Image 1 (cartoon, rainbow, N blue to C red):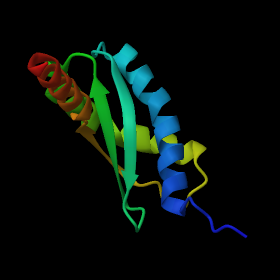
Image 2: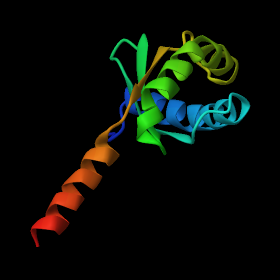
Image 3: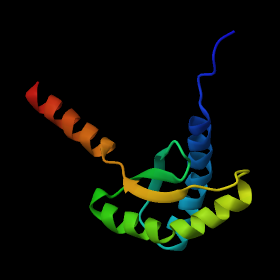
Image 4: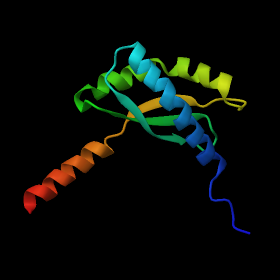
Length: 114
C-alpha cells in the first residue's frame, strides 16, 4: 500500500490557497487594487502561521498591494474561521512572489544571448 504523499500541512496549504484566492480577488475589486493572484501558501509545522505568496500584474505596485493585503489579513482570517473546519486558523502573512519576475528576467537574458 503506497504511503500518503500529502501531509496535513500540504492539505491545509492547498485549502487556504483555494479559499484565499477568492477572498483576495474580491478584496482587489472592492479596494481598487491592481490585479493580484495567490500563487502559493506555506503553513508552519505547528499551523500557527501561514505565509501567502502573491503575484501582482504590475510589479511596481507590489509593495502597496502587499501592505494592503497585510492590513486585511485579520478580516481574511475571520472569514476563513467561518468556513474552515480547524480549531485555530493560522495567522496570515502576505509576501510578494518575485519568481515570475526572475523567470522573465532570465528568459530575457537567454533571448539576448542567442
